[in-house]
Amino acid sequence: MDTRELHTTCTIVPPYLLVRLAKLDDPRFAQAAAAARASLLRDSQIRQLRGGAHPFPYSGARTLPARTPGESDRTISDAGGQERLPGRRVRAEGQPAGTDPATNEAYDGLGATQNLFWTQFGRDSIDGNGLPMDATVHYGKQYDNAFWDGERMVFGDGDGQVFTRFTISPSVIGHELTHGVTQFTANLTYQGQSGALNESISDVFGALVEQHVKNQSTADASWLIGEGLFTDQVEGVALRSMKAPGTAYNDDVLGKDPQPDTMAGYVETEDDNGGVHLNSGIPNRAFYLVADALGGNAWETPGHIWYETLTGGALASTSDFVAFAAATADTAARLYGNGGAAHDAVMRAWATVGVVAAIPSPLPQQPAPPPPPSRPGVPRPPE
Image (cartoon, rainbow, N blue to C red; front, side):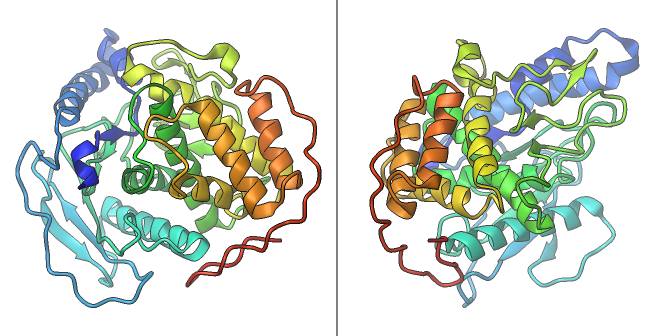
């Protein structure tokens, strides 16, 4: 089955943020309010698409040249402020940078995402089989969002008052492309807890893309998703904080970041596909706690645990937080030893955020299994 038939378009900006902006009656932010209303309308139309359909038809198919596994195959197109995809092709793989920042940032961000997944996890592009990575910049007029539509990345330029261009953050690009990885693997249903896991996994690997390209350790990283998206008129640093959900912004215009950091604050709602952008803060913090406990680079042991869980076949499309916690614990035990430091960090993290009731007693120490066979471009996980 073509996974695109089951795909729901995923946007980086939560709808509740745009709804708040759309209701503004402050003349100072009239431009932002109008842009938010237009963006909500466009997002609503996009979310209704199924089976690879698009509001304006385009052919994404092209003859694929012979390539070496792991090599990037990027194409950037420019929509020129229109809402027609893909737009005019402005940069292909291997071509030099031009003068447009959005084009260059999109090209670099796609490459950084490919590099992380190939060098650390042995995954050749989004589908694991070298799928070309396509992106369109300058989509719509003052469009306040970015999204993965099942085939390509699409970036708006922002309204200029609250949001700047959406290519500015590597974590946003990594986040959206990871929706594609999830689409081709666990295909987590974009509703309720499975949808919040879908969002959280994209935040995890979006953060790892940024950390990897900047060579940041767990301690050095900001753990922010969408850092730099807000203009200087906003009291906020990013869309979300994985380290401290609920603290990314606190602004008269945007309000306060509503993400909970534990199950005690879990939000029951029918909005936002059942709170997928809200409740993702809970598994986000769990991943950060694992990385913090283990130290070093988060794309190593913690990243391997989350990646192998996502791609290993243990998840159902409707998996909830408890199922995902159990799957990550099983993966940690399999890769790094039952009762070892990684396994213990995973179990403690899920207990801290309230997904499991209490920190379990350490399991009897078992000999660690041999590491998985090495794959091209992938270091073995630390023993």
